[in-house]
Every structure is written in structure tokens, then in C-alpha cells.
Length: 197
Image (cartoon, rainbow, N blue to C red; front, side, top):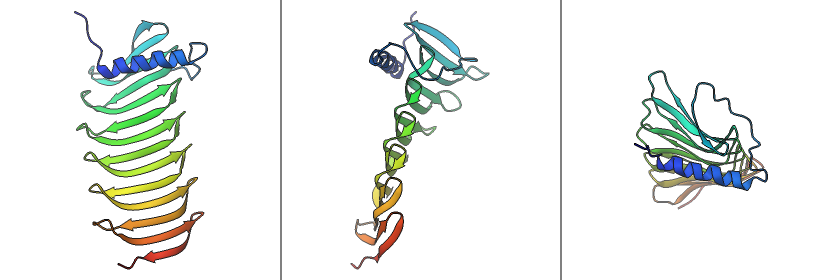
């Protein structure tokens, strides 16, 4: 009887082949992964599928190597091995793409965007499936409008430029009205206060 690979692993395998085809030599240039203590399956063409289990045989982590380097989706599991804790995409050994973390009840906790091991793009945190924060990153620094929510309602916005507050900080009430507004320049408050209704 043939076993079927889970859908996310099939997609991951496709990403491995895609990353392999995008490299000029067909190889991987990232750091070699030490597979000591892992169960490995050679899939051919330099692709290895790895599984790590605890002493009871419960699944802890699984992923792929391309020529000995992490590529594709790597999946971490909560204790018990049934629920996914995190999904991390790798390209040639570097975290590249959206890293997703989930609670033991399979609810999204965070989505962090990476480019070559560096936060890049919009990252978000969640509680009970609802967004709590949205943070824009540009090469590791907050750059853009940070937003904070409560019960899916916007509570606060902060403008950032290259990791420092630069622009407005705005607070909102439950109805979405502005209650407090400050202006910052190069991480220092220059004006603002309570907003008259």
C-alpha cells in the first residue's frame, strides 16, 4: 500500500524543485544542515525528506533539503505531533517568505514576512483568529504604518521611517473617532495632544 504525502509536503516539494530550477547551477549555496538524529528519505535529484520524532515516536518537525541545504516548507508540531506549531519557508538555507505560527488549537498566532533571514514585508499577530497588530518591515526595520487592533477595531496607528517614529501617532475610540494625535520627527514628539470632538 502506497502512502500519500500530505498536501503541504507536496506543495513544499514543488517549491524545492522551483528553487532548484531558479539557481544557475541547480545546486544550493546555503549552509549544510546536520541531519544527525533525523529520519531521512532520499527522493533523488539531491532532494532529501527529513522527519524528527521524540523518544516516543511522536512527530516534532519535518522538512526538505536540496543538496544538503534547507529548502521548501519546514513544519514544526506542538507536543503530541497532531497540531502544527509553525510553518517556515526556506530558499537555499535562508528563511524567505511568510513564517506562520499557530496555537495548539490551530488558530493563527502570527505571520511574519522574511526575505533572506530578514523581516521584510508586513508582519501580523493574531488572537483568536483576529488581527492584533500589523507591522510593515523594510529589510529588518519598521517602515510604514504600524497598526494595533482590539476586537478587530483599530486602536492605534504609528508612522515609522527606517525604524524610528516619524509622522503621526493616532489613537482611536470604539467608534473609530480620533481621540489623541501626536506628531513625531526622528523619534521625538514635536506636537499634538487630545483631539476635541
